[in-house]
Length: 529
Image 1 (cartoon, rainbow, N blue to C red):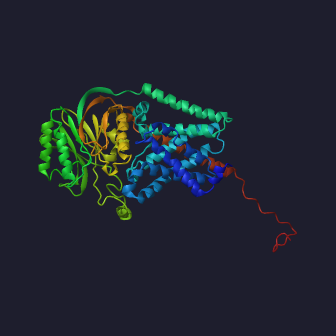
Image 2: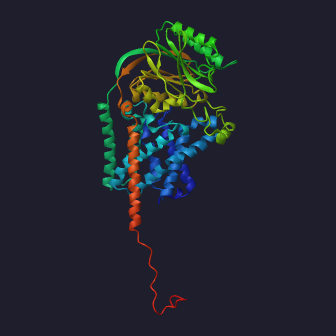
Image 3: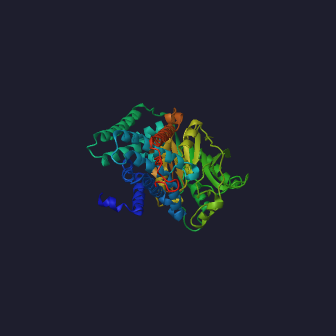
């Protein structure tokens, strides 16, 4: 036993090391965006769990590693939710406890070639199972899926068109498992090492095959889309009215630039347009001046029904066109509090929602004029692959995201949010426009490639982008989340195999020893005498 192993005997020290190891993948995401680091970032965590003295301890390594991962990926929430961020990370971290147990089960000790081969399939499948569960909107949604760290890698974007971000996560974890085996297993264990190398070669071959085989989107014309980003509005009287005036001025400057659509950011309008016809007319006047419809985002109480909604509203030259999308997937604690009667105290320790927003009921594809069909999403809905996939299936030619990360202006959140649009574009083969109030705004082509420059968090401008349109259907849009389904089948087969193994061990175990036979000389009162 090494000195470090003796130091790890303390459960608390081991828990701290696990949390630190689990936090390492955060550097693969924006802002650092070390995409290559994702392929080795899990190795320390895997090496720790495989050396756990018991399966229970390995599960704890998985739990505390998951806590570190969730806390690191969501660290920018600390100013808003304070200590509640740690509570949420701790609860969600439990999802990785079975994964830690699986690491020890397949890689503990000196693994055979068979166990290494199984680990290259089972451990990525287990990771996908965790990502699937935590992607449920009620648990916070799929922010920080490991595969989304590959948003700027062209071959990875091509793979995303085949199996979505799920396929990327699977392959990234498989590479980490192979590297961990090559690091930990002695070179004398040639079969195990050979299996790990074979896994790396197979991953490279799959990537190359997808690069050659997967269809590229066929471009079919282009449109000019303007993104209006007012930036941070400060000074006396700052608020919705001052922001609206800035958006109005920026949009008016687009006159004569032959744009086909203008997109404002999330919460760009702070009142219901039905109750403020004067504001609706001001936006309509802008539409007439620019010759394009304007997609605004209203964050207000509706006049036709109770409650506060966040809604994408399309306004044309004659006023609101009637096309409206009400946000369906709300941000937990930011826009509503789950089980408010139980967790309402969160409002006293952070900036949790004082009143729950109301949910929309269905996605909407809008006719934005000029024959252009667009599919809007709001804020962190862009983290959900299924939403953009459904919009593409329903005929959207451009995916639109209206967002605001102004509460996290000086964190990594704006860059990470903007990067998600690259994955959604590549998955669907549809260009995507990510428009924000204060940055980062970005536009991506149908293959996930970046178009033009980002509008950073220091920008206040209206930028026009030449956006190529594309036709055709990607394999991911056609076949959906098949990597997840495959992972669930692997886990189901594992459960069946482990259950059968436990049953065989129980049946082969020796029965209880029979009591000693009594002889004629024994006393019935005092046996043995």
